[in-house]
Structure formats: C-alpha cells, structure tokens
Length: 120
Image (cartoon, rainbow, N blue to C red; front, side, top):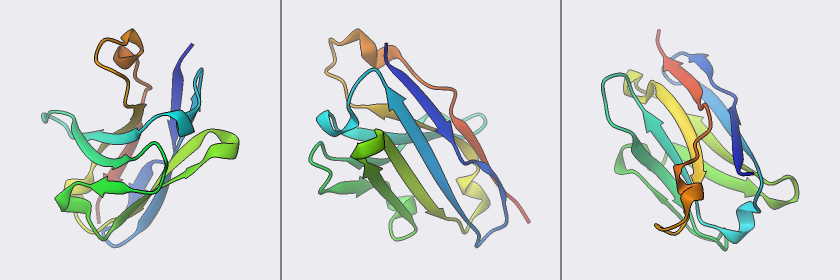
C-alpha cells in the first residue's frame, strides 16, 4: 500500500534552513516523477517542486527558485526538500506525492505532511 511519511518540519527564523524528508513505501520513487506540495492556512495546495522520473531535472515554483533544492535517495526510497527560507510566506504544511496517472486511484493517497513555520 502506498504511504508517505513526511518529516523534518518545524519552526525556523527567516533566513534559516530546514531539510524536509519524505519516506515512501508501497512503490519505488525512482519509477515515478515526484512532487513536493505545500498548503498554507486558507490557501489551496500548490506545487513547490517536481522531480522527473530519471531524477535529472527539477522544476520549481517561481517563488522558491534558487532557495529550495529537491533531491532523491533511491537507495532508501526517500525524497528531500532543502529549504533556505527567507519569508514567512513559506509557512505551510508540506507534502510529497508521486505523479500517478490520472486514472490511478493511488493518486488520492496523501501523507500527513510536515508543518513548516517561518517566524521571527
């Protein structure tokens, strides 16, 4: 069964850094494109970064370009998001998910996410 366990969140001051982890099970992360999402209070969930299946290309939301880095460790089936925060706008709950085909019911599965709070 597909499962995501996100971790690494917490409170950080503007200018600080966090590394989020997403440990996946029930599938192999290197067989799918992987996505980090975030959802801020009162906002819709948005895509933060997408890594290609091959792991050789990552596309970032304009708001995080140059400050966030997505990576993958296929040996332990885990993806990461290195966050070099600057703004309170980065405060959100962060989730990871595989890019399943639209018809795949596994696309409805989400983890609990990990909360990141940027505050001075």
